[in-house]
Length: 432
Image (tube, rainbow, N blue to C red; front, side, top):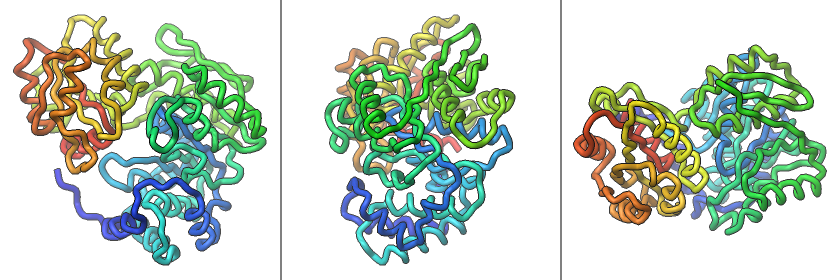
């Protein structure tokens, strides 16, 4: 389904041409533009700044849902977007409108004066400018890549920082070890600002984060989550609460919800237990184990089939999906798991697929539409077969893949589209 042209599209296209690289980690250009605009980053409501490899967006979604359930106004900055750029900037509960976005981008473009600056840097500045001008109670900022040199790392004293799960990703920018990656993420820690840390499975990541927090002088609050029958228990020195399972699917979301709850402890706003429960139940975050029940793709499947969408693309995401696949495998009646899979060339398909492959019966691979950096479908199919999914082949597109899969098994099945947020975005756009 083609999108209507936005007033912001021409200026977004121009901003993409201001720097020869898509990624060039540095804060100098951001500080220069912020200064030219009168330092909007110094006039923000209390900020929660979140970095990590997996779970950043889900953590912010939990935070926003709980804060808004308490009647608070929340600004949110996330990336990448799935369908439209406007998704990245949420002003006091509403996605930024087209007129305001276009005006902000043009203002930043003019203030930049044609100087070199990356697309992410200049659009991050536009978001901060919008947040400084619109009243709100809290700002939620998600890093784009890393932390230390990320364009969002310009708030001198946020209310709280948080690190979600650390795993391998963007190695060409952040390093080849979990210690190096964790060290870059920990660059958002600030002296005297609480640093909420996800319980890292990798000891080297946990150790690095603890050392960096101590070195900076960032206190690390203690907290825990414990699964219970039908839910989980959150405990910290400021809150103890029994909760049902959160509204986002997957066992891993309990820990992401825990990070969000621990952040709430350190915000200068009141969110009572009733608002916490309402928010966790109402939370939405597309393309994170999202079940698609309507739209042309979902409706093309036979009766009794399920269609799921997930944008995960690294080893940790593969582990999370494998845990969910194992739970599905225990359900009665049994249904085979079929995969539609596409990935960027910068990712490692075998690392992602390794944990998930034992649960998959058939896979069809696709190139990501409109992405020059996509792995060719034939290469992805070869990687899929190498992971042990023998019935793997390339398909022309997602629709063709689904059509082919319906003829490969008897009876109802479950289809998972996965491998990239960019692929997820095209699926959401096509599915309406």
